[in-house]
Length: 128
Picture (cartoon, rainbow, N blue to C red):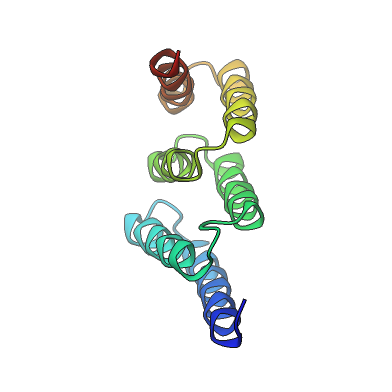
């Protein structure tokens, strides 16, 4: 990466951290999630590889932390699905199926975990 790309990548990371801090008090605020998505879209254009595995893993871990606090956070589930569609890597899809199953088994009444499993199984259905 060139120096300007490194600087932009660091700015994006710093901004994601700021969004995490600001969203901490109200993680259901859709504007925070929209901002995170815009930052990740920008990160994808900065790096020649698009969204790197490290960025994707870090963002999925952040979303999991938010869902641990409130499993019914629709915006977090929606953001997670966007990450999966955008990254679109087979190993991530397999892990996502396990993630959705865990939430389904623990919180079977949560419609978001059902939707996550349906989202994953629909992707499998259309790929075969």
